[in-house]
Every structure is written in C-alpha cells, then in structure tokens.
Length: 144
Image (cartoon, rainbow, N blue to C red; front, top):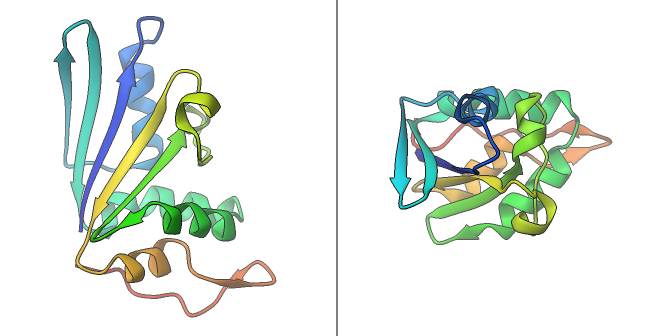
C-alpha cells in the first residue's frame, strides 16, 4: 500500500501549521514542499498500514467508522482510494471528511491518495462495518 497526501499552502497560511495538520493524522516516510509558480504544495508519502495508524485510531476514537466507510467507498476507482479531510480540523487532530472539498474546506483540503492491490480490503481495514457503533469483522491491512 502506498499513500500520498497533498495539501496546498495558501498565502494566508503558515507552512508549518499545514504540515502539522498532515502529521496529526499521517506518519509519512518523506515530506516535500513543491513550488508551483506562486503556489506551494506539501506532498507527504508513506508506505504500509503504519503510515495511516493515526487516522485509523482517530476514526475509532471519534466513533465515525460508518461515515468514513461511505467516503472511502465513494473515492474508490480501480486500485486507488481518494478522500479529502478538512485541513483546519486535522490541525487539531480531528478527522473530518469533505465531499465537496473546495466548498467545505475554505483553505483547501488535505487529499489522501491510497494505491493498493486490494482497495476493498483497505476500506474494510481502515473503516470496517459496524453494529451498534462497534467494528465487526475487522480485516487485516492489505499489502503489509
């Protein structure tokens, strides 16, 4: 499993704060800042389930597995799952999904791009089905 996380740094934002928002929910192997003309983009990359352990734990502590599962399923295409988190919420360690990223996250979202050989199993691992709010049948992570 390979994970790429991207977040634009707007003119009014502090680069370190945007990076902190990413690191609150993701443990990357590398972090780079790309200069794209007058824009800056933070790109963080990680491999394996350990890179997503903070998000995994946040989804459970916030008791939002059902909502997360819906967003993950909507973002599945082929061997890729793409989803967006609210940047300001992530800064305080909260996972909040965006369905219309530019409208719901005025400073732009944090975009996760997960590439895996088994996207269904990835979704079942990160956000398993629940019964009365409790995870059931949790899967092992794909591509360990």
